[in-house]
Length: 355
Image (cartoon, rainbow, N blue to C red; front, side, top):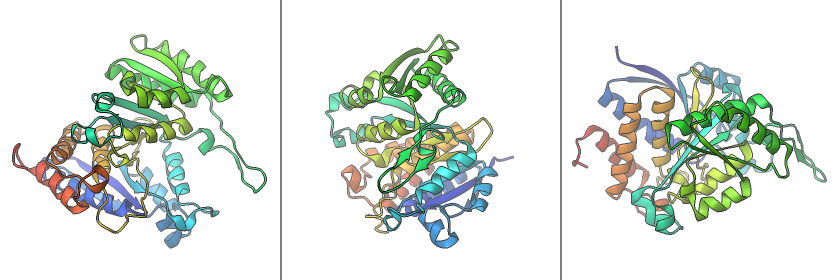
């Protein structure tokens, strides 16, 4: 019997509907080629949900996410709600909390077709292959907040268990790769950083085959630009993980190339989302780069649906399409969303050399 997957689509705002739409077409082609079935449920989140449902994510959408095999997410954010009491981004935070997707995996690798698009020298970027693992459901993004004109605060709280579980994910990942893990914190000035370091050291005793080092967050930011090949797997908290992974987007040449997977306990649905934002300035123009979302779908098949063969095919299709010159303008090319999508679809269904 063919595999049957229930996938919740949350296109969101800005270019989200465009890149999710393009990726759905790619997935339909892959399902036909590999003989599996995807049952889609598409719902609102972010500004689109605020306008239609009065909240950035509804209880019904959260329930649908919990009952799915995986969630494929586009982007949230809309200038209309900047500075308001209700923000589109709250929908994504609520989704992460509801599914308890505590480990966010963000691979950053040099792409041969884009090496000259990176603002960094070729000799710095070539050969880069880093996996950043960001704790996703705690810290200052989820702590108690006080917001006012004269005084504001964001409380950052971590427990031993919250650090332990994401650290184990990171050690496991490092053990499958080159056996090197860098834990990033600010233990020199932050109490949460000192807890983080203490717990990671404790968990490291369970993984003697993995080489562990600790680097302060600001030093890591410098090393990512000066010598990114020193890193294999990086594990860090919510705030630093957000900043460092965005910084690392310059390595492959564009944030439009970075996928991510947000995972919880085994057997629970993950959230799979491109790292880029909603890009309202180009929404509706047909020029959005769908590669990050297609690569995110590849991560969905690898980490969420247990079909690494499909994941490999999607990644290969993207690589060959880019080598063939199918680059959107953010990558230095002039191809539009439709052309890029069609190129990836043709490669999935065609033999080598027929692009």
